[in-house]
Amino acid sequence: MNDTRKTSTPKAPNDFFVPELCQPEALLSTVLLAELLVLVLVLAEPMLPGFDWVRLALTSLFVQWIVLLSSALLCRLRPLLARLPAMWAGAACCALVVGLTLGCTAVADYYALGGPMLHEGEVNLYLRHALISLIMSALLLRYFYLQSQWRRQEQAELRARIESLQARIRPHFLFNSLNSIASLVVTDSARAEQAVLDLSDLFRASLAKPGSLVSWSEELELARRYLSIEQYRLGERLQLQWDVDDVPADLPIPQLTLQPLLENALIYGIQPRIEGGLVQISATYNDGVFHLSVCNPYEEGGAPMASRGTHQALANIDARLAALFGSHANLSVERRDGLHYTRLRYPCARPMQEARSL
Image (cartoon, rainbow, N blue to C red):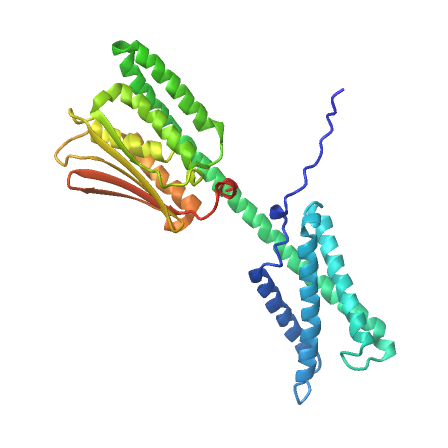
């Protein structure tokens, strides 16, 4: 009998709403917030003619010890806490902070680090410190949780936007490839059959991984398969020059980026010319920035057939680059000396396995 019971998959530590408190930026922010709390506690006491700097220093030392110990302990226990539901994980974090606060209070009381304390005020002091630590830790955890939810929503919206852009680019690619195959059916049925097989392999590879990013080697294979289909139709009119050997094979690139650029080059640079022409593809990766260039012949006086699909594809690529890599990514078009250049660049210092999580 098959077991149909569902088992809950534990969350990865990276999805946990409590950030890595051991990181320098998070630790600095926590220390600054703790110091603000110290100022609030000192100012909340009755104002005396002379400001008690010793009291401020002792309170700051006491609070910072609690903050640093809590950060270290939560950072150490973060993988275990990430397996719990958010509510129980938050309760456990609060309990840890309160426990450390009571422990530090007991140590300070035993060694009289804060000066002599009256016996009748002992219970009230422990209760006061416990309540303060509970309230502050609960507020901070609530802030972490809301920030985590906002970040997840932002990532989900970004993925939906990229998938929408990705879906729009595929129909143009399919239709134009089918048109190329249709032109071969009458003239060369054997090549048309092979082109259909190439298109099948190309589309299978394109749809195999639904993620928005693929490796450079995969994208390059997609482009070569597309060009093999167009080679059947254009024959010797289409000449290619590749200069892409210096690009790492696992470099992440938005899926279906190179193929629309090549399609644009063929429609506007090769197809209108009786003699055809040379399409040059060059790519480099230097100092964490990827550069891709596609060059094709262009005649200013010519009137090539307009293709709305390729115009949409270029705008689509530009939008996807901006969504994935920010304002430093761009796509530019330049015409000079009878040549048409389409260039794109974007910063990408992350390995492929991390980029897939976008």
